[in-house]
Image (tube, rainbow, N blue to C red; front, side, top):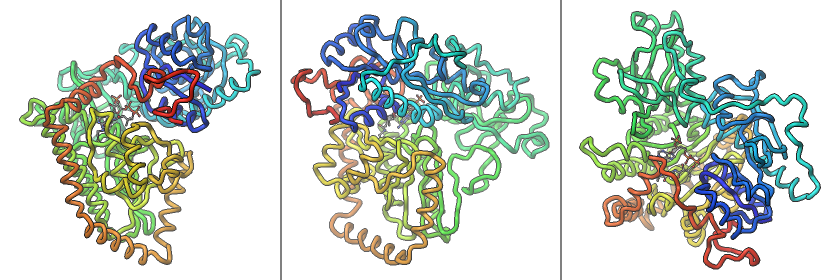
Length: 593
Ligand code: COA
C-alpha cells in the first residue's frame, strides 16, 4: 500500500513505524505537519491508500479525513482524549490499575474520539514520560498500528465506535497546565515530586525556581540516603524543604517534605535544556559536593549516571546519560570508568548504555551553551569529538577483555559508532539506529567510523548508509552486518539474554584463542593503516564542519537544540516531492523499499 505519514516530526516512534511498514513492503512517504495546505498538497501528490499520524499535535484537516481513512496513534487507553495523555497518566499513576495504553483510532471531527481500530494496554512504569514513550508506548504503538494497517488492508474490518464501547476507562483530559504541575516543596512528599517532574519530562518540564531564579526542572531521581533517619537527612536536618542540599557532578540535590530528590537538568528562561549544576555554576559556592564513592552500582536509589556491576566473569558498565547525549566531561568520566572496569578480573565487558537510549553522540546542548564562557561552540565541538574519539579508541584497543555493546535503547550518530567500537554489538529487537551524521548540517562524523563501518557493510553499503540518512531496525542491522545479533524485544528478557550470552562468551573453551585472534587482527589493521591516520582524516573534515566557510552544522545544531519548527519535510522522507515522482510509477530512490 501507499501510506502517507502526517506527523509533527520524524521522531523515534515515527521512525519505528516507518521501518516496520517499509520492511513489510509498503511504500511510505512523510509530510511534516506544517500547514493544512501543505498536508493537502502531500495527499494530492502521493494519493495514499491510507494515512497514518504517528505523532501529531494538531487536528488533521477535514477535507483529508473526510476523503481518506486516517489512523491516529494516541498514547492513551481507549476513551482517553486530549493532548496530555501520558502526562496525566504518569502524574496520577495510570488508570487506577497502574496501567496505561495506546489506541489507534480513526480521525473524525472530535479529536481522539473516532472509531477504534486497535488498542493495547501495558503496566505503567515509574519513569519519565519520554522513557515510557520510547519503550512501552512505542512497542504498543507499533503492534497496534501494524494490526490496524493489516485490518485496513483486509478491507472488511469495521472499527468500533467509541460510543459503543461500554464504560471505557479513559476520559477527556484537558491540556495539562503548569498550575497542575506545580510543586509545593513544603508539603509534597518525594513520591509526588517524582511523579510531577516525570510527567513533564522531556517536555515541558515543571516551572519552578532554583537559587531564587526561575527555571524548568527535568531529569529527577530519588535519594535513598535522605529518607528519615538516613545520613543525608540527619546532616541537612536544619535546612528547610525546597533547599538545595548538595551537588554531584552535574546534578543538584533538593529537599522535599520527607526526603530529597536529585535534579539532573534545567531549562532557564529563553535558554535550552542543560545539566543543572553547570547551569547555575555561579551559585554553587556554598553547595557541598556529595561525591560518589566508586563506580560500583549503589545499593539504594541515588543519582549515579555511570555504574558498574559484575556477574561472574562478566562486567556490565551502565551509562545512563540524559537523552543519550555525551558531553566532553561525560566522555572523559566514562573513559575513566571504562579503564577501571578493564582492570577487574573479568573476561567480558558489556557496555550497557542507558535504559531507553544507548547513546546519541556529542552533546549538542552543552556545545551550544559554550558560547560566552571563554569557549565557542566550534571549540567545544572539537573538544567533545576529541573526547568521544579517545573513548572509542580505548574500546577499540582493549586487549584485556572481549567487549560487547548491548543496545537496550536507540542509538544515533556517533553513539552508533561508539557501540561498533566494541567487538560485538547486540541490540534489543525494536531498537532503532541512525548510524549517520549528515542530518546534523552535513557533519562528516568521526568516532573512527571510516575504520569501523566499511569492513562490516562494504564500501558501497557504508556509502548508502551515510547518504540515505534513514533509520535502521535491529533486524535490518543484523542483515546488513552492522550488528551481530538481534535479541529479545522485552527489556527484561533482553537483559537476561545479554547476561547469559556474556557468561557464555567468558566460559567459551576457546576464549584465549579468541583474544589472541582479536589482538592479531588489531595489530594487522594497525600495520595497514594506523588508527591515528583514520582519526586525523576524519578530524580534518570535522574541523571544516566546525570552523569552515559553510555554517550548516552550526545552523542545524541551533535549530535542533532550540527546537525550531520545521519549515519543510526533508526530501529523502517526502518521496512524493521527488522531481520524478508519479503515484502511478514505482519509486526506488529514498523510498525505503
Ligand atoms: N545532544 C543533545 N541532545 C540530544 C542529542 C544530542 N546529541 N540527541 C538527542 N538529543 C535530545 C533531543 O534534543 C531531545 O531533547 P528533549 O528531551 O528536549 O526533547 C531528546 O534528546 C530526544 O531526541 P529526539 O530527536 O526527540 O529523539 P528521537 O528518538 O526522536 O531521535 C535521533 C533520535 C538520534 C535521530 C535524534 O535525537 C538526533 O538526530 N540526534 C542528534 C544526533 C547527532 O547529530 N549527534 C551529533 C553528532 S555525533
